[in-house]
Image (cartoon, rainbow, N blue to C red; front, side):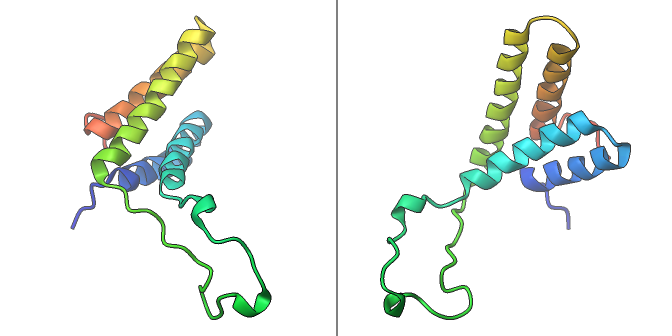
Length: 120
């Protein structure tokens, strides 16, 4: 059974980048994965404020909160946003190796999202 979720695709690409020791690609993929993880985090302002110890929840995982469930299309949109930010950054840099690298990484993220990229 193959899991084609964007998170799995990005994690597999990260493993491949680690094998190839491609630091720039690892950084880009980690950033994209972090964006997805942060999107699933709950709003801490929605949590009740700390109170008396007697009123505190007890037991294993009593203070743990469920992460938000985000549909696959929204996750893919977040990765596309990450690619767009890389492209914007490359435009601000202008010409040169750094800009070319960011453009290439943005293109790689887009290919991973659309499934057009090279498979491992």
